[in-house]
Image 1 (cartoon, helix red, strand yellow):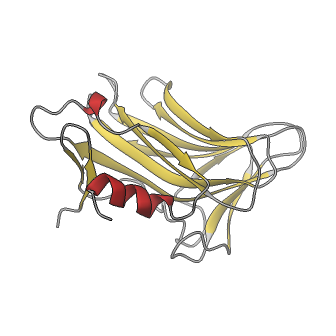
Image 2: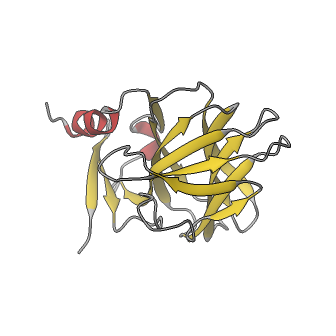
Length: 196
């Protein structure tokens, strides 16, 4: 069964096509085997961001090194995708989610949150994979001010986007959205679909 989510643009309808490409993006699996840790400690903690029971907590070393967990995903070159998720800066310098062309380690984009707080923020970002990009690396990052600090992530998704024939995605919705409002994802979806 094909799963598609509709997003209204100024010039047409964008569809998220097919299954979510991120494994354990909702952080509900036992353990963190689906995420590769680098210079930090990743665990699942009991915090319900949405309908789930847990979220991924990433702790930096005390040495000042940035902590990161990654997942590499097979993609199609020169194809439009939408990456979305929720992030919370507990007590770090900042937390961020970034996407790299894993073939050449070229940064495609990075979305960050510097302010600390008790609430998750939602982001969504659309991008087109480079011409040689057949493998995408998604990084969840916690930046360290020199002590052990925490950042949390949940409901990270990656979908292929189809705008249909003759639609220019550059004329569509803003590609980088961040909000402190926990109902933002639902409201954004309704607004883009023209639903009250």
